[in-house]
Length: 170
Image (cartoon, rainbow, N blue to C red):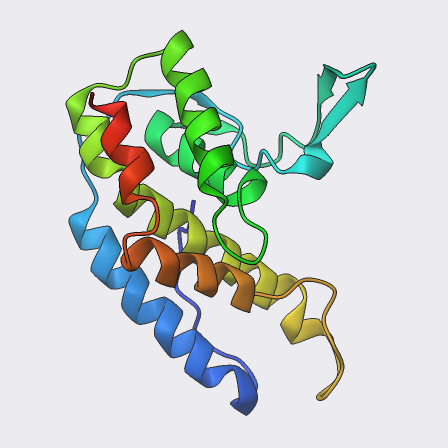
């Protein structure tokens, strides 16, 4: 999770840095402090899963593993696996349904999903900005685009995931 704010960047990145800092302050203030904690992967993207014959055979990259809240981990997985040019609600619903079949979400976690999803977007926008955008010469294209996570953030803020989240409480 984000533990520090972004303070410096090249002039072209300053608007993104300002947005990330402002939205992080906003969502950190809204964050529930009493969510259930457990072992979380924190970075369960497609490139961190190995498949063999259609079955998961290994999970990789435990650098972000921590004792964290489950709502954040679920939302990071949705951000990673269920977004193309927009959220694919069928995939989100499938992920949520599969998750709920194993572990029902308490109401406190249901209420926290939007905020935790926003924090996840800001975390990955930050790391893409610092790890990729700040390391390329001006005008060069970074290997990973922080802007894609700001797009996800805007979608969450616009309510794109609300229909799927609503089914979790049903």
